[in-house]
Length: 104
Image (cartoon, rainbow, N blue to C red; front, top):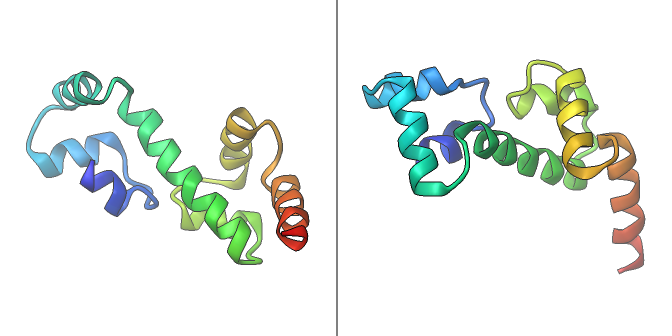
């Protein structure tokens, strides 16, 4: 879990993590799921999306730049996963959050 927290916003793959830990990818995925009740992929995506939401709230970087900073291969991939989790695009989410922030 620590590796995901430390390197989750880089374009790190599960195979890279397995290599760092000197275990097979399948064993790593199995043990991770057994201990966390969720997949490594889901955990990695969630970690990256948390960083995305933080940057959307606190910085005015273009979405494409945020995608790269958070380990997504492109803004298209980020948009797809962001919509799947939040039901809206990163740009619209940013606007709605800015509106919420102004009223608080």
